[in-house]
Image (cartoon, rainbow, N blue to C red):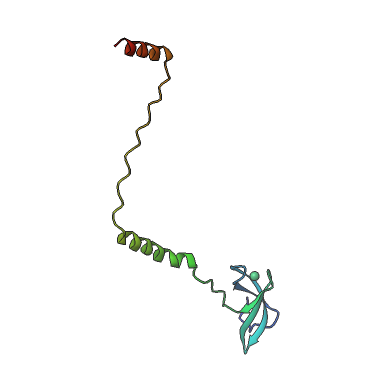
Length: 110
Ligand SMILES: [Zn+2]
């Protein structure tokens, strides 16, 4: 771009808040020699000229807060109990009918 004053209809780079990208924009409004409003050439969203400034990502700004929050919650919580003892697996035996029969016979004898 040259350093001449912007004019209506000029194509300039700016950040589109709808596309969330740096894209080509048409100059649609001027305030003196300054660009006041632009229209995104991709989604045709008109918005104030942001001087091609990409705003800081919200996620990056919130990440440390989230971490400290979870730390606060964890700090306020009592120590969690240890894991429960492993359940004793029931011993599944195949029923031995002959052994049962012998046991019954033996009980009858006594
Ligand atoms: Zn757009």
